[in-house]
Amino acid sequence: MLDNDIDEFILNLTKKGKLLNVGAGDGRDSLVFQNRRYQTMSIDYSSKMKELAVRSGINEKDYLVLDIRELNENETFFGIWASTCLYHINKADLSNKVFPAFNKALSDKGIIYFNLFEGKGEILDESPKSYEKGGARFYAYWQKSEIENLLEVNKFEILSFKSDIILFEKPFFRIIAKKI
Image 1 (tube, rainbow, N blue to C red):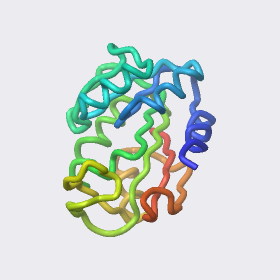
Image 2 (tube, helix red, strand yellow):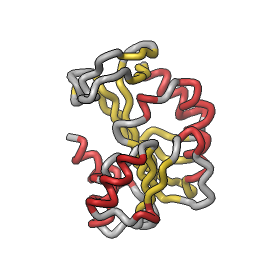
Image 3 (cartoon, rainbow, N blue to C red):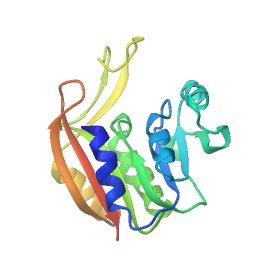
Image 4 (spheres, rainbow, N blue to C red):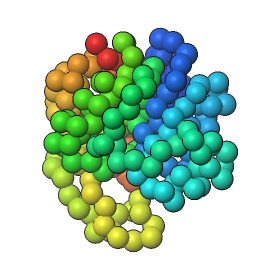
């Protein structure tokens, strides 16, 4: 189902230009975008993920190891793809650092795709299903009204808002929005 989200995201792009893939991991989605002729800059917090991405065909210069909270990109992007990563950031940082940086990095009427877990609160899960090697991971859970407020405050208009159970048997929001 997340693969279908790539198609919907691309359909909403107003121009064909450079994309930013946030939380790019092993580069799987970046390769999809590149195969569809989009120039793609990838970022992830993990240098190990960059190594995997470069081995799979991502150009090393197109992949930055960076904490998304420190995004200060001087380039402009027509779209930002942030799949399965933003729920690891606390709500305050997402609202006050990440989304303002996304707004700055997007061109006029640029498109963003992101997903978040549905629920309440923030937790440190000591043994999450998503982390095979073991160890704790942080998760933020969101209500629809919180996401709507996050987007409104940061000057985004919702184009698509879906709720499904996809990852780890948890309710999951999938959102496409446009910079206004």
